[in-house]
Amino acid sequence: MPIVAVQRFKAKGLEPFRALSTDPDKVTNNGYDYSWGYGIRVGWLGQLTDRLAAGVSAGRTDEEIQIVFDRYKAALYRLYNRELRRDPTLRGQMVLRLTIEPDGSVSMCELHSSSMEAPELAGQVVERVRSFDFGAKEDIVAITIIYPIDFLPAA
Image (cartoon, rainbow, N blue to C red; front, side, top):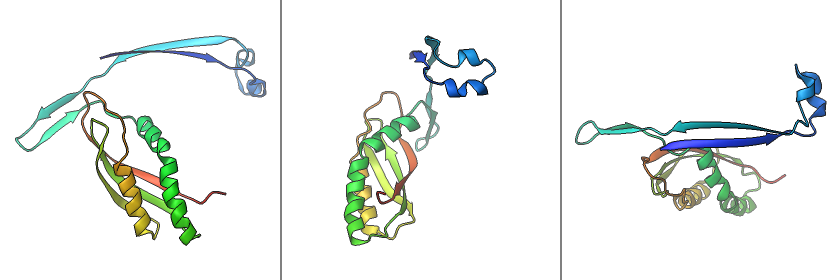
């Protein structure tokens, strides 16, 4: 599948950085600049034995995964804030291990590790992440990732 990208960029108001440049007159206020690129997406999936398949394929990017977690961040923090009312000192990190299927569903999610003493919250977070929808993508395989979530009270 061919991929073509075009980008347009304009820098304004960067006068304070002129002193750091080897060409100070070209740092800012020079109109638009364009760049473009192209590429292809490739992959391979093979059956090595009747029980083992292996492959190299384009999958989900870190950015795509982060966007979905950002979309559901409020739901996760609602769970955390409810628990925070019971224990105002609660803070830390939960690390989840999850598998995202090509159809965007989460087929497996478990607590990989946690710095928090909050098993009920961990169970609620795991259940909520299982309901995430990462969106369907064609020609990819399921991916298992390790994903950290930091829980800190609002300042």
